[in-house]
Image (cartoon, rainbow, N blue to C red; front, side):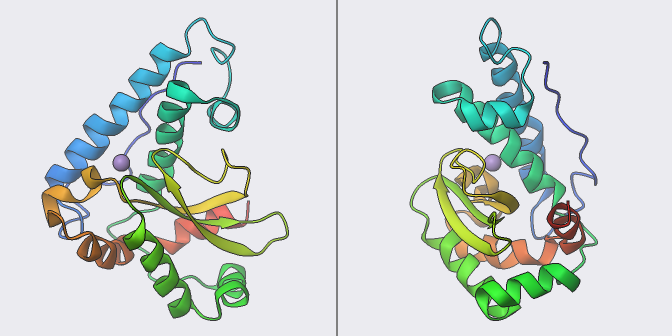
Amino acid sequence: MKFELPRLLYAVEALAPAIGKETVEFHYGKHFLTYINNLNGLIQGTKFEHSDLETIVRESDGAIFNNAGQVWNHDIYFRTLSPFPKPEPSGKLLEAIKKSFGSFSDFKEEFSRSALSLFGSGWTWLYKKDDGTLAISQEQNAGNPIHSRMGTPLIGCDVWEHSYYLDYRNKRVDYIANYWKILDWKAIEDIFVK
Ligand code: MN
């Protein structure tokens, strides 16, 4: 299966000032594309040559996983950002957040703390467990809740330096504060109800 760069749902400059044009050009147009090209090259002649992406993410390791994980992760990352985001969750997703974290603001605080405290490169996730409750996890490098078999990812916040360094230099805390402003709860609700 040959993987392709998914279409960006907004213009490269549309997320500014939260995430600037140059960051999107490099992060989407170069980093994400490189993971896709690497993956297409690495799976040739392996048992994953004709697998779908989720199967590869779940079952591979080493270099194939590193690239497959990053392809999956960047797809959800860019898909859940928007220049016109739904600013807060509602309905069943809001109920699940309240049940699992107390309130929406308690959830945001815990998620922000997780994203800020992750050492090195990786992702903070909100995911749905098999019992329907929600949880937050930190994963190093390309890790995600599919690979670690913890549940269904709903939000993936990229805290690799390439996602914020051009805009915020070393200030990850400011990146996270602004990430909330472009996170589209409509897109997340669509994943949640699937
Ligand atoms: Mn990234």
